[in-house]
Image 1 (cartoon, one colour):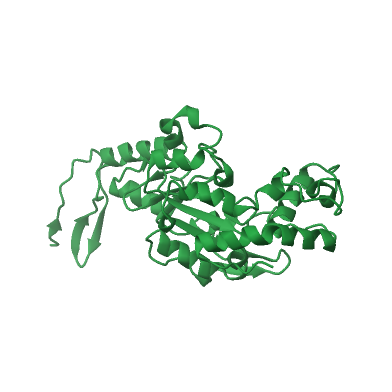
Image 2 (image 1 turned 120 degrees about the vertical axis):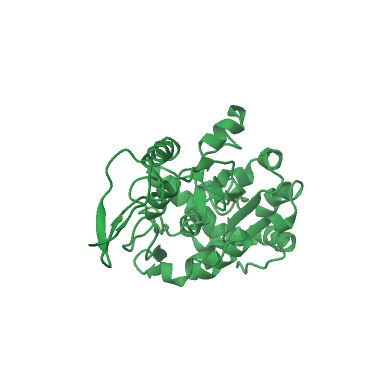
Amino acid sequence: MASTVAITTNAPTPLPHVRILGSIVRIVPLVDDVTLKQTATTLRLLAPNTTDGSPKYRFLRQQGLRPSRHLPDALIIGVKKSGTRALLEFVRLHPDVRAAGCEVHFFDRHYAKGLAWYRHHMPPTIEGQITMEKTPSYFITREAPRRVRHMNPATRLLVVVRDPVTRAISDYTQARSKKRDMKRFEELAFTNGSTGGVVDTSWGPVRIGVYAKYLERWLEHFPLSQLLFVSGERLIADPAVEIGRVQDFLGLKRVVNEKHFYFNSTKGFPCLLKSEERSSPHCLGKTKGRNHPRIDGVAVDRLREFYRPFNQKFYHLTGINFGWP
């Protein structure tokens, strides 16, 4: 007669038995039903969008771990139209990075709502995971450096930059896609509406590209060692190398590598070969890799001349020569 191996449990419902090597074994979960139900309820309340089919969160429920919301450890503070969305999507492939899905705009628009409001907009995390948020307008917001330091002086800051002329054209292209009757780029970039005028620094797409001006404000509140500057050009040409630098900066094991990317020649942009949520290849969206309008060569040359001294100062401040024309 087969012997019986019983594992005691407080579970109120009968448990299944199986025969293993001639013995009858009762199968018991590592966590009792009550704990499982409590954990599942907590996860639904804390992270309603992350408790579905994700293997990681199924495992958390089984182990009884309870994620909680924290203020961000790291911020992508800019620069607009330089590759901030790509950086966020690439780095959040890492299992130890959890990021807010949309731009929260706390340090520029919603600061009066308080840190509790901000924390509520962060994703739930478990011990060992990094909380991250991206809002590119932080870089140019005068009050943002002081406000971020007040939240946490140890916050790690990521800044994505690209050739400011190309960035200005990309900024204009995005605006024109929403407003078809916009004036031509050349009319907006120069004071008299043509390349015969001076560069109009009051126009946002031009003004944002004076990176050194804004960086000086951040360096009044944070040491250079807490800022990582990511090349928007290299993020496109070799995303694995740039994401490797980001993982090192954040103190993460290098998990995201070249196996996660492929290059979409139609978009001219790297896309994701796989991610935690999707095993099939996918790109970041139709707005990424958008074709730029043709800009008069004289206008481009004049803008390059305008930006050159500011670029040199930026290189000096960061200790990095980005090699922009």
